[in-house]
Length: 242
Ligand SMILES: C[S@@+](CC[C@H](N)C(=O)[O-])C[C@H]1O[C@@H](n2cnc3c(N)ncnc32)[C@H](O)[C@@H]1O
Picture 1 (cartoon, rainbow, N blue to C red):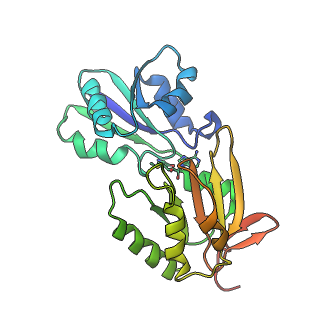
Picture 2: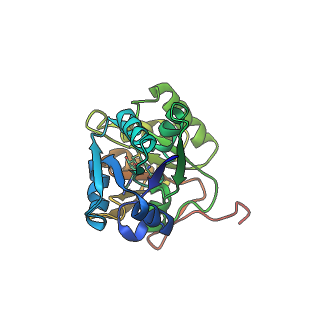
């Protein structure tokens, strides 16, 4: 039986990888993934075979990985953060039925909401949600509805994919939706290039976030009504009872 492991690498540095992820990569014969992630891990395993696909080549990458596993190769398909959070785990499992001879393992990793939160302090101390602003696979109206309802429910909100070349003002538009419900002084945070060269965090208000520059390597955090800037660290208390 072939084996395909879908591995979350964590935010980007080797210290951020779980021991289970390291062990799985060590055992793999072929590493597949988007070039940036293969570049992160290949120096650790220079003798392993690699297969790199472009950013939009997800389905091709999954099929290739499944086909290689079906032919008996031990394959690791790598993603940043957690493989199940806007990653390759779900497309692999959707296709896996066509390859019954392949055993698929999902190896968890530290998603950007968690690694970014730790850099900012403790913004996720109470209920939170994660919303992607990418409209490649999700209609804009769905994203807007989720933003509005998350704001009404007073979740702390982590925003993934806050910008891209095609959507330079996605974060600004999202902040405008949130500002219909939330106060402009709501405490927010930005975490950029977590665990990688150029890592940077910033605490700012929701009104400032609307005007902030960001890129696709950033995760944004919008506080709940309870979130505070406590001496330069974001803190959401664990309870609403004071
Ligand atoms: C397609 S999603 C992949 C998420 C990934 N599977 C995870 O669990 O973190 C890409 C988005 O994740 C966030 N992200 C991933 N790695 C990051 C990092 N090292 N620093 C900041 N944000 C990151 C950014 O919001 C980016 O636009």
